[in-house]
Image (tube, rainbow, N blue to C red; front, side, top):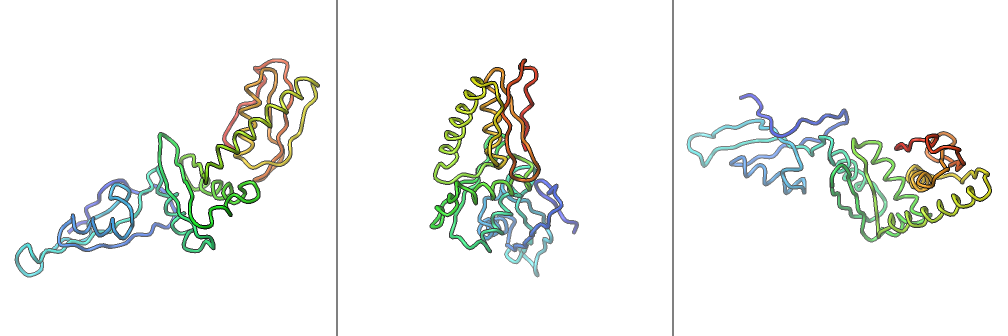
Amino acid sequence: MEKEERNNQPSYNQVIEKQEFKGRSLEDALSLAEHVLKVPRDRFNYEIVTEKTKLFGLKNKEIVIRAWLKNDGESGAVEVFLKNLMKVFPLELTYQVKKRDQMIYVVFDGEDRKLLLKNDGALLLAIQHVLNKISNQKVQADCEFFRRRKEKQLKEYAQEVARKVKETGQEEILDFMNPYERRIIHIAVNQVPGLTTESLGEGFLKKVRVYPVTDDSQKNKIEQE
């Protein structure tokens, strides 16, 4: 019989890991898929591959489905990447993926979680950067409330620099920052009348220029980098 497809088709070009599951009913096959994939059925797509009756009677009925994790603009690509990463990653980590509104949140835990936060969260932010490259939606990675502490520090730093530029009228060039750090600086400084910012350089790490403008209409638009 023709394949019967359920749920949404994947819309990305990455290699999709599909697995087949058998059961005496569709419910049995879906339950097995949930157990093996370790996600509820609303988190994966499936298609019916075969449905047949062995000999006679419903007791011998068999159904085969093919299932794969969803990636319909939600968290599928993120979960597939993290699942594969954990297979080869040298750290003992666990994670939770949550979706709220148009944002995907990844919260890490586990025995080696402290190593994600070394060097000012460099590894955590690098993983976040990669996740944002593969996802259609913005991804925030966190561990032990790192983001809350980091954002507070960066906002205070931005306010301090803004006060200095306002007082002296001279621009300030801030040291190299990753995209996450730059965005916080951009937002904080551009809330101050008469000041704006721009990123300088190419690549992952860039400097930030904070400088005065004569009119707030000259403020640069803050974009996701």
